[in-house]
Amino acid sequence: MSCVPPAMAARLDVVSKLYGNFAALRKLSVEFAVGSSTVVLGDNGAGKSTLLRMLAGLIAPTRGTVSVFGAEPKRHRRRIAYMSHEAMLYDELSALENLRYFARLQAQRGDCACGGPERSLRAVGLDPSLKRPVGQYSQGMRQRASLARVLQADPELLLLDEPFSNLDVDSARHMVELLTEFRTWPVMGTADDQALRGRTIILTTHQAHLAEPLAETTLTMRGGTVASTISRSAADPDQAKEDAR
Amino acid sequence: MSRVLNDLRQDLSRARSYFGHVFLHLQKDLRLEWRSRDSVVGMLFFALLVVIIFSLAFDPTAAISRQIAGGILWVALLFASFTALNQSWTREQRNRVLEAHRMSPASPSALFLGKALANLIFVSFVELILAPLFLIFYNLHALGEGWKMLIVMPLGTWALVCNGTFFAAMGLRTRNRELLLPLILVPISLPALMGMMQATTAILTGEFDPGLWIRLLIAYNIAFTTVCLLLFDAVLCAE
Image (cartoon, rainbow over all chains, first blue to last red; front, side, top):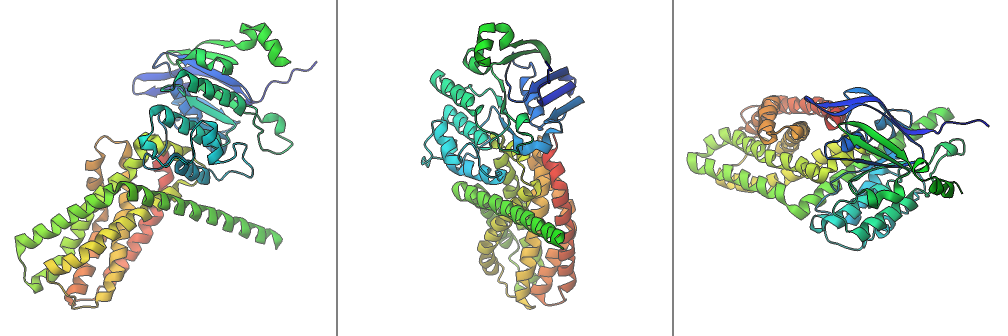
């Protein structure tokens, strides 16, 4: 039986990131397989956000190499979406206006699995006809609008930085269900590379219990490097069998 | 032949997409300003204040007014435009929207061009309100070819907003960006300011031909618009 290694959605190779004298990441080497779902845990300052921002192509490593789908992150802007602590939406516009604006900038290729701005907003539990500007939303509503923004981008690599902060438990559970469903959305592509395509999620959180359904792999970061890696198959063989079935 | 046609079709499609994005950014900036009104109101208030204070301080005759009006008008607009230029990028920084732009597949220069055009509209709007007041307060009527002001005003305004939008973006990551913008923009805009003031004075006094200064403004605008468009990607993606 031949064993084919999984295709990599993202890879960091001995990456360090320095801010002055402070090392946010220290010689970090980690890989994320296509179609995988990873939860990154760690204390404040452990390097979780820096890791995500680097994968998003927003910051460059001081040393080492970062590749997403085999190239520099900025070469795959259409395939990556990043949800930060902040909403990344204009306060003066309504959620629908914001989403329409970003959808047109994204200029989606052909059919989009998300179904457009209105459906994305409904999917996160927001009313698309709400005229109120985002600046008047509660933190939780902003967070949901922000999730709708990234989902409508139809990304193959979804980076979520603390998506459950400011959400009540029910909303967080709903978000996890939506993300689980998102992983099953078909990825548009040619037949040749269909096997290499899948939805990959990397999520950072302090609320590990909420993200559990998405934690196929759990990375714990400490002091800018990976302190431990637990994959669900190793942690729970019964669950692994169930997943395989 | 078909390959050439195909390439041409692709180039056209790319250009259409690029200008579609420029229009999208412009539309968004106009909408944001319409809802907040923080740039135009600030600019208008400042420009009016400068024009009124100078008219009260000098009490000039009609002849002296024609000599100094060009300088006063453009200095008032230059300083007033700092408000709009800083404000336009502050909106992008709020909620880290700029990072969404950095991750977008749309061209960064389309964002720059859309924003510069929006600033051009804001400053032009202030000019439209300021012009009649300026004529009344300074008792002005042009002795030269007054219609040439229709060429000088947009050229001069574009020189201010194009560089201003670019350098305001450059200062985004600095702590004292409100202070930094005038420090960089004024020296760089000196040739353009010279052109605007001299051309305006030439039109108002009718003593000399503004043609040379208008050509200087055109050349300045072509050079700086090109440089700003080419370098904006580096400015936007700088950490």
